[in-house]
Image (tube, rainbow over all chains, first blue to last red; front, side, top):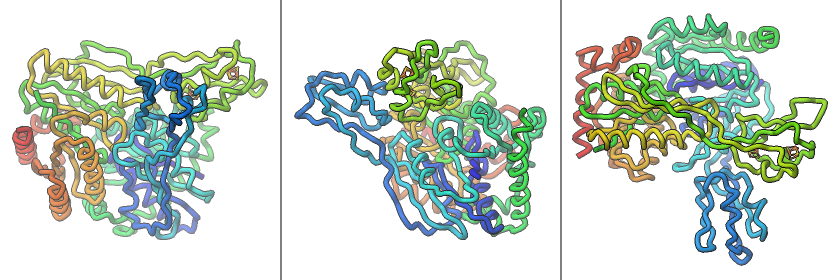
Length: 288
Length: 292
Ligand code: SF4
Ligand code: SF4
């Protein structure tokens, strides 16, 4: 079973829930993996101190022009929808950051002058944390295409009983890449106007993808009641509420796991896991 | 005219709350919400929309079912796995617009021209008025890949307004992360403020954001929010920043007034005259100073 931990708004506690839930499942004796797909700001490793065993470059295809064969016809620039190729005075200029690696130029070059080479956009690192396999990706500074790195992290994940995915925040294409082909999405939010607004966007996203999901509320006692009322109205399950606790904030600031600093929270996460299983099992009936 | 962009490596560090307070403190300014993926500034500033325009992030492919001869070539060439077969009775594909990257390869490959390729509207942008002056903001449709393009539209429009009305400041609420929308938010700005928290994650993200702004050679300062949550790490972050030539524009203490102001739909400096507001006012003064 694959579970994505996502949120419309950043900084709501996605990483806290992803890391602590994974560790809880591992201590329950499950084989579990954690994939940190927040490749722009990967933070899980700060809490887990994993032992990294291997590191692989993530590459995306980039055209390479054989100048001997190129006649400067300009067809490659014409077929590129992203403006990543310009042909000036019969010379081909390539702008790597704009390339989406779709292969159009290579496919349509009448002279067969284009081959594709790999361009490094990030890395994927694999290793072990306490009791489970850990994989994360890192987008290279100045690169735009985080979905390619996310995709590579997900491919590196192997079959196992449970896979937990820490997704990037938001609802745009990197998030879709992280949550697609998972079995369940947990949307983490805060009970504030910003939290509610961003939760509504995220709910719109998972509904459009047709995925089973539920909500977790972090710092559940800081703001107002609007998030809970919204969930009630929309018949969305709230499977976890973590109160605002200075001890949690301090443990977080030092890069400590909540379940190590305050073992009582492990029970809360075990219950949360049970609810995920139930909701997932009944989802078909619930929605039909 | 100076453009100040407020970003945060990871989200949720109080970036938008700081921008809302700047909106109340600065004179002669225009506001731009470039966090188009999760825009929140409007929740505090209650903008009255005067103008709206559709946004298209690019084209999307669509199969014209009646024309399709079921050859399967489009599915074969699509590198983004956008095609699926909704009807088990036939082999007529359908493009999932969420996954389509708009590369157009299928359109060119289809032997019977059965695929249309039109601009897909996936968002809107607005010019509004608020009690703190003009504001440009946007709403990005779900799953849109081209958020950088929308960010650029919002910034350009804000610049146009600033020039026309002879304003002193463009105050930009940037997006989190280090990818496409952030790069579009900061390119060519006069000053970037990175708002962070005194946590190891905050430190890690700050350093990545600093690398990004250095990569694009944009003057950068930092501001630590909730600094008293962990004074040691706050200090560490400021030292690490200084080593990279990044000054700080002050610290903001932890205060529940920040959440309360949000609930009251107002900025912190308007909500309370307390110490936290003094912190923010000092950050604004230091920011103006850092602009030179
Ligand atoms: S335009 Fe490109 S991404 Fe979209 S369906 Fe066609 S081949 Fe796939
Ligand atoms: S290439 Fe054209 S005709 Fe062939 S399956 Fe695709 S849409 Fe249909």
